[in-house]
Image 1 (cartoon, rainbow, N blue to C red):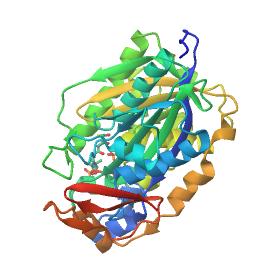
Image 2 (image 1 turned 30 degrees about the horizontal axis):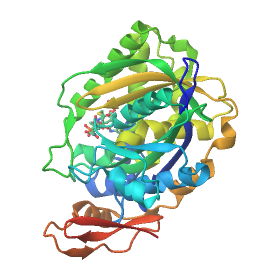
Image 3 (image 1 turned 45 degrees about the vertical axis):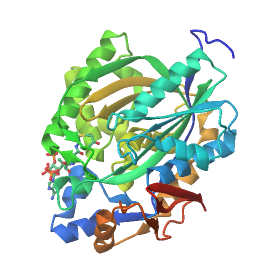
Length: 394
Ligand code: CAA
């Protein structure tokens, strides 16, 4: 074990994402419910949404995101795996334990699941940074994985999606150095929630947008009071994107509340590259803000040495604003081709098939129920037997 000094740079050393087998274009949803497609493409800024196959879930997505990270760096030094999700599959066992097993990680690992709506992955990242400050020789694998699900024929339906992001958090990171301070904000609001007895989230759409904006203002105020960077120091901003237009609403609100003009070209310049994955994947809850980072890094001209602002919002609500500095030379470590392939490999489905998948739930009778073999991804949920999920590597 080595001891941290104040100068130790810590942050995201590798980042990889995975998404589902299927994709539903918003044109199909619009055709089903008679909505003008412009409301989806322009109004909320979404083109399609990822739909899990019957044998995919947060575990298979999380393992698929993390496997390339472990393949590149090995498991040496990974002593903690933090799994962040708000679409948990078990009230007791951490989904990360299945991922730990599927990836063959050493038994000398601590594994835990974290929840606070879409904010969970940022909490995981902050906990990881603390662990590495304590012992810079260690690495933490953060996995953020979610399947976003609203009621059929509800306004939220158009903002579903699913994906997982895996981040290796280390000292001297190759991608992004995460800085202190953070701006924090918590408020007890009922804008979006999912009681234990429900599969689909409950949401008050307009209230949730207002709560998000209130949190943007709150985090920025605290960030300033904690001695954070001025707004003009940032080259880009990665927001939580429940739908991509929300990032634009949030950034305009941040500019207004900080006393700046909302020059549309400047807003586009700060956000434009961060929405590419989210607009075709949909809301991936905890993973969303880090899909924004992936899109930025995969597309931008060299950002080495530049500062990026992150705004993580989780309904209920908890939010955090923090800064990262992109590491010089980061482009050699990106997974751009893998990310594009993850998006492009999805098979389009029609509305009827999507509805069937949406309505399916795992049997609860304790019997032996193999899952239909649908996914072509690297891991699958093979079935459920005696109330136990069985996973396999394909
Ligand atoms: N062409 C272009 N634009 C159109 C249009 C058309 N034909 N028809 C409508 N629009 C525009 C509207 O003017 C509106 O734009 P503004 O927001 O700029 O006013 C936009 O499309 C959306 O229209 P509505 O407000 O009428 O949409 P809605 O009420 O049917 O639903 C929603 C929108 C509230 C976001 C709904 O999808 C929802 O409830 N989603 C889930 C909740 C959510 O994502 N909340 C975000 C904040 S909470 C959070 O971030 C946490 C999380 O992940 C859940």
